[in-house]
Amino acid sequence: MTVVIPLLLAATPLPVGSAVPFQEPASVSTPLLENFGQQAPVRTFDPVARAADLATTMPRQWSGTYQPFAGGSPVSVQLDVSAVQAMGQMVDLRGQMTVGSTTLPVQGNLNASSDQLDLLLLGDVSAAGLEDGGRFLGLQGFTLSGWSAPRLTNPGGQLVLNPVGASAAPAIRGLW
Image (cartoon, rainbow, N blue to C red):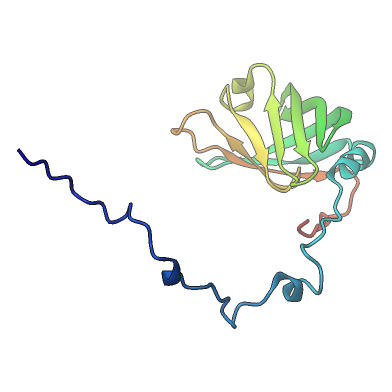
């Protein structure tokens, strides 16, 4: 009885002379030429220092409006920040927010590197026309935020806050 074993071509070694040497294409530029002689771009922004600066210079009183996406009239909002503490590149915020006529404690985090804001209203938020389990999320710090409801059936809303006593137009910050 004869046993036939199939020969795997991938397992057979290639002859020594069959390898083709690699040559870099002429159209590709080197990283040294692209970055003006530097190996890689240098990041000069220090988010930890910015968080410490924000903890001392950030306005403590904010005023604005909340507009539900489902319709309805805008509601006045007041935010009073009573405690600010830098923790690495994060800024921990504590205070109270008045939505309409309802005042609730608030706790939040502001990322000094990306200006992302996360505000949680503590207590019964239904009296303020919001839904329990939701939060305010901002991608531009306090100036423009949105209410993210915990359910898909609630579309949320838009929160626009400006510092009290500041100029009408908020400062525009470039990308870091």
